[in-house]
Image (cartoon, rainbow, N blue to C red; front, side, top):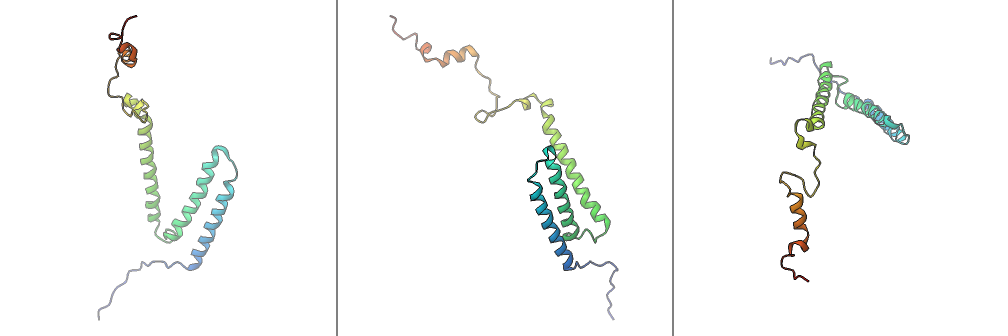
Length: 144
């Protein structure tokens, strides 16, 4: 009497064998990461490490997040989020790197004990006189 209509879309149930194979592949890639870390590739160390990390991340995203069996648009959205993350990081880093061009105060280096140089310093001559206690008390010192 009261029949429910089901749409043709369904969720793929991932067999356990996929999870086991993915786990083994992640272990192998982890061992490769440790093994590769013993070699010095110079400036390409980060490139090699990122290639292995991208391989591991793609395995996790495709199997555990189910992107392998979902519609392709979900993968596009997922990869698009990383594109926008890269854009945001690039814009932030360009602001930090080129900030001193717009504001000369940003180009100054500040120490830990004196973080800001907003208060004007005393003139050098007045600071030298105030720093020496012998000249400050010269008027009351007895003459010989």
